Image 1 (cartoon, one colour):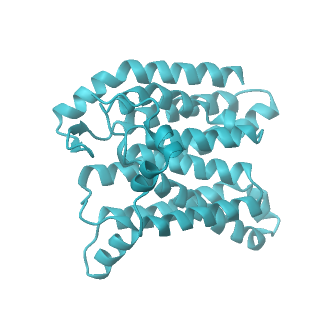
Image 2 (cartoon, rainbow, N blue to C red; image 1 turned 135 degrees about the vertical axis):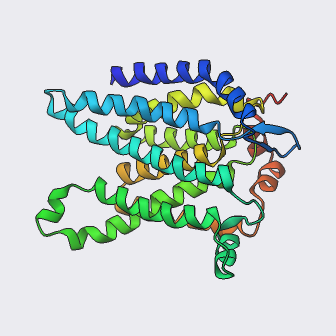
Length: 290
């Protein structure tokens, strides 16, 4: 996995070097939003680090496909699947960043708007994200399971994993309300997978590198990753969970994510974090807002 480490380093350096120019491009194009302090900040900066990570992951996947090693060719599927996940959910998030209406918030808010005949980007993102999650979950299973007549047995797994990927995508949105918070949650999830000793943690290195190259700008309040970044990061964690956990573990994670969504309709996660000393310290760690 030396190549993954080198590619991850290259992704981080490239993201860090390009980001100032990219933020200037966003400002010039009017892509900005007021943050929690009332300051206009470039929005959609996650586009760069997600696509940088997915580009590097795709390069690793394609190079592994050409390898004579069977183990390397098997790893190619993993990199290409993660790249498809990151790119697909980043595009769904980009739609929300470009034309999203912030008057409706939360899944219930978008559902109420839809019932009254108003289509919102949040509703589009939820439906398309769920459908894309099922497609990715189906791709994750070996085609042999369907050719051998076990497709019916695989259906509940596809259903659970599709829900897990889509729920993961939306969960990171719930935390993307303060500088660096969504990135820290993603890194925490990755560390848990890494501690479990699963190879998928190493396959995620291109996105870890590109995210680390971006985070200094987010922590200083100079950039917002937007849904284009948080959606993709959450989906990557959901996909990684489906690849690294046994079905009971995946079901447990899915239940936790569902509970977080229900809680988000009732309480403010920011208020909870700021009212607990340890959580507040972790949330403030590294922040140097200008």
